[in-house]
Image (cartoon, rainbow over all chains, first blue to last red; front, side, top):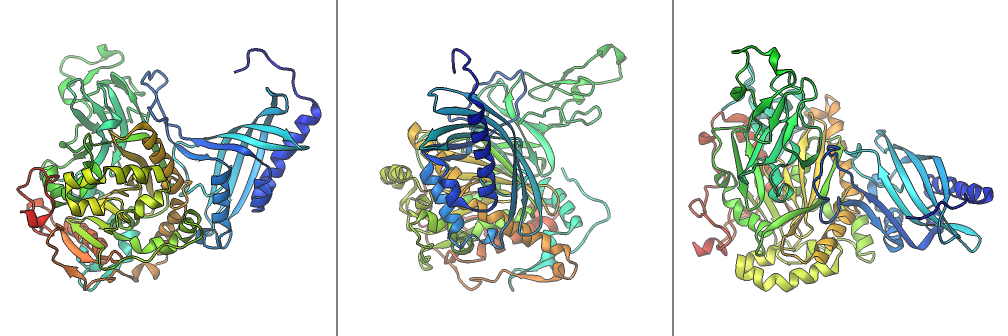
Length: 175
Length: 455
């Protein structure tokens, strides 16, 4: 972690990064996966770790291989997921599901190096599936975004899902 | 011990004809049949509750369900494992809300009744309010199950004091189970956590998919296979050298090509690891089982546990009403694997059969809609077709169980529903037919048996 607090980023950075989050959500809602991949850094890491309910006083050691992950992806793996979605063989997505993402509670924080920012946000995802069932998922996200060639690229995302039991049969969606 | 519903003696045999090969859809949707399943199947069977590696030390515990009964599974100071109802005998409140952890006591939130990890009542808030003779501490602990058993690391429990031994319950299926539980010195462990998800489907659809439904893979998982396999679809199955084997409702479907499931895991290092230990595996388990391990395969233990040997996902389908189950999944590995191989397995499992996995994502919707269409009263009275491969039963000199040739088959599914019917119909375990007659009944250790011809 950082030793000293850094000055907040300039307003124009905050606006640009916040807009990037909103744009990202819109591209994904519209299934513009190529557009979304173009917003990712080459070194992107994309993770969703599991949680388990423990007593507050519990002192047992953490699991030797961590709690397990649902997503632990790099750019190649994310491209593979997109290829799968575009393959024309994903029966559970045909006709398409409706997904709407709402992004809020955006905090843009300075970090080092100074062409990067750390970003906290909240994602609410509404899924309406092909059989009409509706699910609401909420998650907290902590990102790193990097300014590169005049654009902001996502280089790391840690997703914390607010459900100890997933209320859906799959997580066939990007957070 | 029997738990009987009063005034219900329906004839369940009218819901299927397995010689003809059909099932009535009401067994997947009817609320009364589901209730009866809780009594006759879940309150009487041996049920998987934990892998011993999940609770290695004294005071380690986890919470789970046996049927819809919430239970605590706890490691005792003497190393034994106890399984008890997660419900206070005072007013019935749940006493433990954590998924897992380590503790000395379980304390009920309502009146502070406190139990040790064996479930014994140790005290309560304002104990002075009870006069002498009001309460016998000895008889007011958390109710323990009738029996706990352990087969090579898998811990099972049953509420049924008349149940046969766990070894007899698993019977000849132990020969197959050794392929995942005992293919290397040191046995197995679960690593990482437990993923839970809710699926709006009948629990039996999950079990029957893993017990025998290799057939769905090439179509349902076409997109996943192509994305893992340079755009190529699932290869055709070798129908001559692949099998279904069923033992008392447990079932394993498998090829003998040795690599299919390992390939689908998508982690070449894991494939290399198994290829390296395969000669030793052959010494340990015999040629046939060393050829089966790693092949395209899937299996279920009656009534509600499934796994993919080679892909290493291990799972339980927990019933939550006729049209809902909770899916719990874990990663199972060999204890003696190097850490980097364990990490590779974990990654591979999540990328294929986690809730965000390239294969898992295709299944849930199918099972949900196989179930929920039966809300329609006309639909639910229609029959389902389970006749695939009905004439392909064989006698095999190596493979125990009821064996059918050809991996694309409904044979194990028919075996599962036959056991379901036997349990729904028979009051006494002793009168339930063995399917088939046990061939390895007197064998204490099945690891050393290359196959039936060795007997």
